[in-house]
Length: 513
Image (cartoon, rainbow, N blue to C red; front, side, top):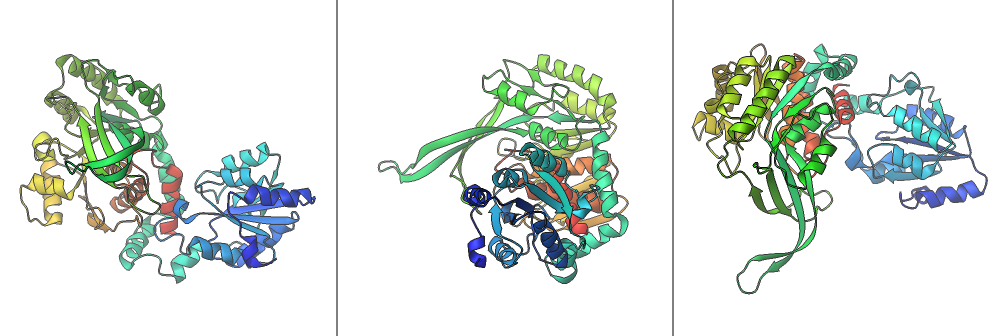
């Protein structure tokens, strides 16, 4: 068969496989990234083909590959063509999903093959193998472990191809000197033992999709046709969801109103054990509604206009403050670390801030500037004691009260003023600057190549940084994990879904391999 004819679309894949099955063929499937074809792959495919009659190779589409920046090195058409050129491969299809489950359900193989290194689960860095096995069993297939010669595409690419900048490569090599892949995996798994408490403003992000039709004829107002909308868990609730993926014992203290649309989101976002949120009919749930154009593939989402629903005076009612305080007095002593997400919407009253600064074992703070609190919600005006913090360049400029500053000098100065052990400055597409008392400064360049939406990226970075702080990891390793969290977040519309532990671990292991 011509190599080009072997490549079929994912939507046509079930029909193509059905044709082979009607002829009595036994179907074998291999699935992966297959970024750089090497001898190990050849043994893998040949041994897989020996398990049946027709070998189907499904590959993860580039936008869903989670192996760190610069991966996959080869684009989808090139990877598909390389596989189709192999005589032992009968069908190739690009899969528009991050996991193998959908690919398995589309092919419904008699035999599903994984590399021999997965047999004892050592090769399963993402923890997805049990799901694959369960899916194969569900469709009546069986697992086979093949590939008598094992090589690593990631190692070959890292050793012989320039897939990262020299600065990023040096940064990762430095980390790999003190943290092996096995130690990294163990550290991330240890996060599950942490008891974390998130305290802060719960925000709901509403995305209203519209098609812009043009300007009205009389008043030159932008006119758009409404398409659809979704309301997401943001603010401290987004941080809570990120953390729960790594540390299931995380709990959240906050406040929301009694609007009818609020409770379904709360129930879907919170675990029963983690729900310490106050509901009060006198409180206006913080809602930020953004009118946006539909996302175009590979493009950043286009935001047109924003409307905020907020409490008028940003002051916490005394009765609500009392309820929050009673919960804090019960929960703070039990927490390994307290994460404060201060968006300036009223929850972090002076009384609450004072209590947290006095009683939290480890206090990690994210004090954000936004259009509602610009120049008023400054970390060095609201806090005297912080163990770790992250902020962006605007927030550092405001804290320094200067237009032109040395970022490193002002970050260290602010950290020492607050008595912090760790501090981070995130500068979007430029770099992230980290500091601690022991190591001084580290610089890490951005890891995201394609940006869909920057909303929530800072929250994801803060979440991973806090996990590292609570676990007392080295500054450079914490910074890398947090950068990966931010990089994954910018590929998601708002806070539609939390960052994935499997993806973060996979990206980190790839960078350090």
